[in-house]
Image 1 (cartoon, rainbow, N blue to C red):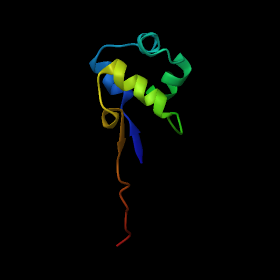
Image 2 (image 1 turned 60 degrees about the horizontal axis):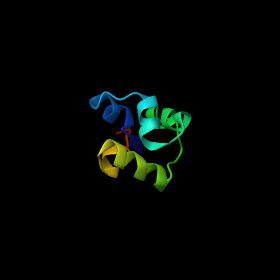
Image 3 (image 1 turned 45 degrees about the vertical axis):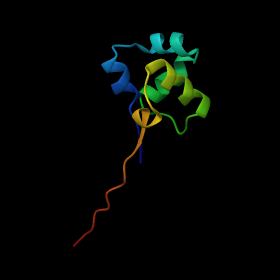
Image 4 (image 1 turned 90 degrees about the vertical axis):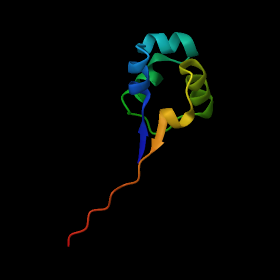
Length: 73
């Protein structure tokens, strides 16, 4: 699964959604969806703007977490 860590990063930097919208020029609704992990994708341009504004790397914002398979032994 893909985990979006935008809420954690923004919390660490004490930023609100409106702050990130102002810094990046991105729409608040899109940032909100990413913040709440309610999105099914992200454009490279959006990721680029977020990384520049938040001074972070792509792997800080999105992270791959392998699914754990449960077995019925």
